[in-house]
Image (cartoon, rainbow, N blue to C red; front, side, top):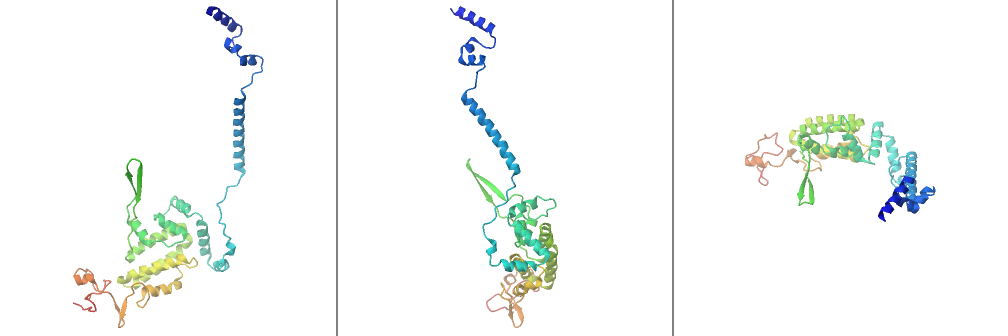
Length: 317
């Protein structure tokens, strides 16, 4: 019986080589022979769905090309209601053209100062300057000259150290960057000279302003005894801080800082640690190192007075 089935199958294939007997016996085979075969409804829907997605994606790409680039979201605060706006606008119109340009740049950079600093650091010819102090320049803040001097002498490459805790956890510890306090005229010149280079790179309109302040401070250092150069350094910090807080003031506006000069550079001021005066002479604190016999400075060079440090004594013994 099996032999007879095989013989019938071979005869059928010889008459119609396009399919097997099983194929021709199936309902789909008959539909194909009559030209009425259609794909299952489910597969047809999937193919149509795929074509629809493709068409929608092409249409969305065309629409994206036509749409404008979205701008950064603006603040919802109504600036026209600022009480100080009229006064600020009137004052800004009286400022020099370079200062008006600087204020316009600072206002624009305030939208994304991190992006501006990143672009500066990636620009060819960018001066060697600490990134955090670049941010102060971009934001219009006062530069920390101690950090600039510390970075000048630093050889650190990476200040972040990671420590593994077990197999799944890792803790990152960020070490403080090296700082070197400015204590002399030479230290100040190094730090402020690098600040001029960086500021002139980002804001070339400020080159003459900072150069004038460098010349003014050099004359001031030369006019004050080295033992009081720390007062001159404090005066510089106070001046640059005021100029940063009041945008209409430049470092070259020397008349704006007369009160600060009195505070930090006169013996009758209200500044921090002013020198005392008795009988028209400057009275300094006793030198404890001189009393211990370890002071290596002369009387004129030492910041403190070489006298007995016992209470109300001040003798030369």
